[in-house]
Length: 405
Image (cartoon, rainbow, N blue to C red; front, side):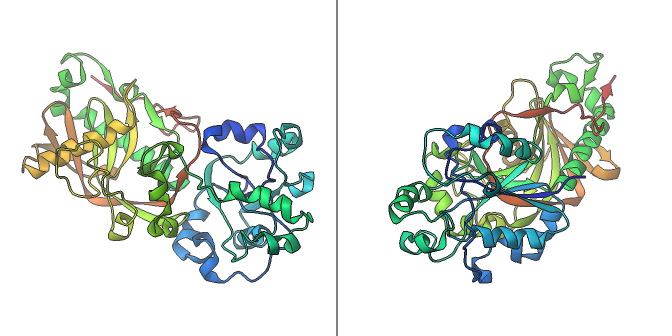
């Protein structure tokens, strides 16, 4: 198996072709190389959670993470990179632009310089965390002039600084599941759909899914798509295009949570003709980064509990967007508010033990007898939007066909 934690350092030049395919140009990702003269004085208060928080460290060890360090030359990236590499010495590797002699300067193109680096990057692109050193001098060009090993002049550093002062905004912020727990939840989703489809009560209500009573329904084919990375979205930013994105990213709670490990608690699974998802019960700590208007964004006329939209999309029907999963969940919440929990129509066993209830319009809810706990990292998704994988399965055969007669 390859390394699970990859630490990447880039020059000030534009990113290479491989990474550009992973991260859209409009995300304005500013990758920086690491200086070899960074100070060794990095107090714990300046270190990211993946170095000092035990729960985060344990979660990282169960994940496959790409860490990108950004910052001006001499700001402390070398020390930070070495600290991370040492912390995860058995499951990490450091990929540096230094060995390719890519000088940190602004220029219009640098694809040729990055061609060899691209080959190395292509083996490790996965979940992404972008970190910056928290050293007091990280934006002090006068000090950086003496600290960077490239011997950049004060003027050259001042030319680079404006790009570092801009906030790096992702497509969305959220909690991203550790690989092991992601695989487990996909299997759990399959088990849920298989058992649900085998219930006599479900077979009698196929018309709600657009099928006649005696037709065959392949549930996994019906839910044709699944997100490539299972996650619980906290704030959709569209790389800064959404109003309030910059203000959200600047919140102290968000900065403190970024790259930290969290345990998500799943209390229910649900399926509608449009989506299949998992209901997430956020803790008080997790609610600190949950936007005040998250529920109002999609249901402005309803007074719904804060955090009630928190969910993990497990699959959607063809042409249905992932955002619909949260809307479907809120429909269940509204019914619960009106004390209409639906009709109890049976129980499921195994991984998905619990009671099944049915509401009108093909809405099925499984209240789990025991909450499912999954490890996650709070970070941002910087990749291209609209990437999904077939719910039917993968080369590993995690999700097989489910036939309903």
